[in-house]
Image 1 (cartoon, one colour):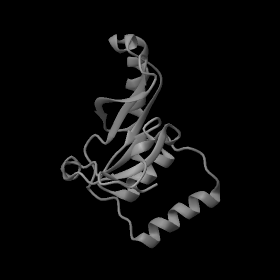
Image 2 (cartoon, helix red, strand yellow):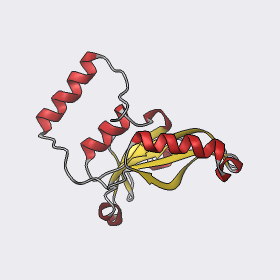
Image 3 (cartoon, helix red, strand yellow):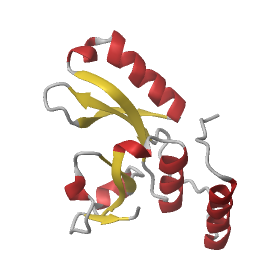
Amino acid sequence: MFHIKKFSLNTVLLIVTIFLLSGCVWDDDTAEKPWQGFSKNKESGKLEWWFVSFQSYEACIESMEWDISNSVHKAWYLPPVGCGFSSNSKIKTIFMNLFVGDMSMFECLVESKNPETRKIKAKYGPVLKGFHEACSDTSKYVVIY
């Protein structure tokens, strides 16, 4: 199971209502491993995505926390660590990043206009803090949240 952040009853009811009104279904437009880890690069001081994916938030965060303190990665990276969710489902991507993932470490959520992202089931996803230039509608991205 995944960790759910605490929100007021009104917030939960609002989200449920949005799902019901939008006719949202939990479709198969999500990769087998939709969670990607990130941490802060020691040299640049910026958050960076790692080239590693996980099936669940728990597996992602556990691995990232272990790697940052026990593997060779500790020479190049430091906390904070986190995980972001990407998929071809806009509603699912927003929900998972807001209520399960590490939204506080993201500038925004975007839709990529790159057709390749659809093939890997990552049309929608988060932008890390420090990369705010991607959080404006451009020829590459459309901001969804």
